[in-house]
Image 1 (tube, one colour):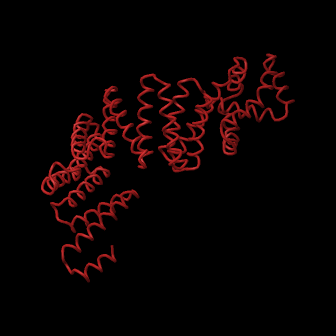
Image 2: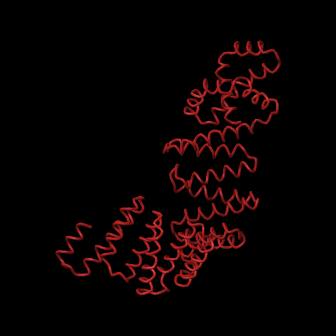
Image 3: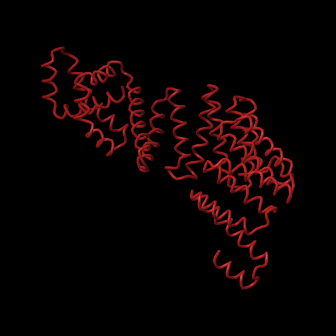
Length: 380
C-alpha cells in the first residue's frame, strides 16, 4: 500500500485513478485482517478504502457489504443496519437489482436475521438472495449452490425435512460435478454431507446417517489439520451415531480422537472442561463393552468399597498421571485387567478381614483398586 501510494502521487498527483487503486489495496488489507479475526482493524481499513472510491459504485457497494458484515460480527446491529441502507442504495444506483452483489447483500442480511433467531425473516432474505443469483448466474453456479445449502440448513431447522432434503440433494449433485471438473469444493461438500447425516439420524435412518457422516469425515481428514474444529465435529457426530447404534467400540475410537486433539490444543478452561467430559464419556462407553454380568458386578463393587471422598483424594493425582501417559481407553483396560482377578477372589468371601488379606497379599492391587474405584466413581 505504501509503495502504491508513493507511485500514485508521483504519477497521478490527486487524480481519481490513484485513489481507486489505493482503495482496492485497503480493501484487500481489510479482508486479511477480517480473516485473522482482528475485526476493529478490518473495519478501520474498510472505512479508509471506502473514502478512496466513489460512494455509489459497485466497488463502494462491495465495501459497504463488508463493513455491514464486520459491524454485525461485533454485534453493532444499529451500525450494521445503517450500512445496509447505504449498500442497498449504492447497488441500485450503480448496477441495479440484477447483479450478484444484490444477492450477496441479502445473504448477509439472512445471516443477521438468523443470529437474532428470526428464522422466518432469514429464510425470506435467503430466498431473495437465491432467486437473484439463480437468475443471473444459473442454478448450477457455485455461489447459487452455496446459498442453496445454507437455505437447506435454515429450512431443516424450521422442521421441513422433505424440502431441506430436496435442496441438499441438488447441492450434493452440483458440488460433485464441480469437483469432477477440478474445482476445490471438497470441504463445502463435506459440510452438506454432515447436514444430511444429521437429518437422517434425526429421522432414525442410522444406516444413511453413518454413510454420509463417514464420507464427510474422510473429506475433512484429507483437507484439514488433526485438531480443526470441523474435523472434531465429524468425530463427535460419528461417536454419537455409533453409540446410538450400540457399537461402543467404534464410538470410543472417535471420542479418543477428539480427546487427543483437544488435549494438544489446551486453550483455556473450556478446553479443560471438555477434556474431562470426554474422558468420563470414554470410560462410560468402555464399561458398556464389559459384557460379562459377573465382571461388571465386580467392577461396580469397586466404587462402593471405600469412602468416595477419601478414595478420590488419594488416587485422583495418579489417575491424572495415568491418562497423561496413555490413551484413556488403554488406561481403563489396564486397570480392569489388573483388578478383576483380585475382585473375583474377594467375591468368594463375605469376611471383611479376608478381603483385606487378599488385597494385601496381591502386589500392586491396592493402587490398582484405588485408581479403578476413582474411575468408577467418576463414571457414576
